[in-house]
Image (cartoon, rainbow, N blue to C red; front, side, top):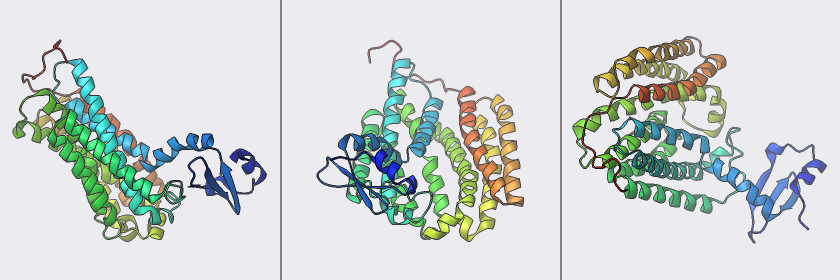
Length: 356
């Protein structure tokens, strides 16, 4: 007879819920939890309730949401097609393609790092270390998600956006992930990966709006967007990694926070300072108006102040303040870019009110 997991937890309350593991077994109408030495059969209904959480963990749902958000910001900064319904449809297709690509890249990452994830407190409860999903299943899910994401972008946007998405999956899975066990340079590779999504949004929208895509027009704004995301990731990740460097050391990752602490704080400060140059660059490339430089000034000043504090006295509290500020900085900065954006006056291949 099927036993409810809640009743078992009640009878074995001395066992921490954080140590529950789940293993899918055949036939696929049951799942097997282990609570200490007890094995509990869970009904199919209870198992299906867990699937959203399991897959959300596999695809790193919060990280994927950030990727989609930066893609949408890049999309919004590109010139409009002139038709609101067309723009919204293109945004939906682009976001879906990038989301699927991100799901695939993150699943490949967890498939490759499952043995190491089991050694870190932050990641030991992920689906693969706890046997909630098999490696075979995770690999095929990653492959299918990646193919669908790139294919959707190729179908609904253009070949360049699809190429960027496919390249990003490759960089994340085949370069960044193994580099974490080889060199502290993995952070720089990861920053390149994080800088690409807004380019997919911008180029996908631009190419869909106009019959031709002149490089002279898309390279300057794309460079600004890429540099913004590239620089932002250093204070964000360096501050994060500082407070979990013990986990990284146990898993054997080559992180600057573990092997080169001075490089960690210096990189956070250098790239925080670099963010101050984004505003004049955005104005010079005609991506935004001059008022953007004034409105972004307080944001950059606070970022540099917190980065200097982290550089001078690197400890848990200074790292924590810098990390949480970076979470505020990026959406506000992107919102200001959208608020002050400029559109080049070109003839869209779409006509307002035309049949779509």
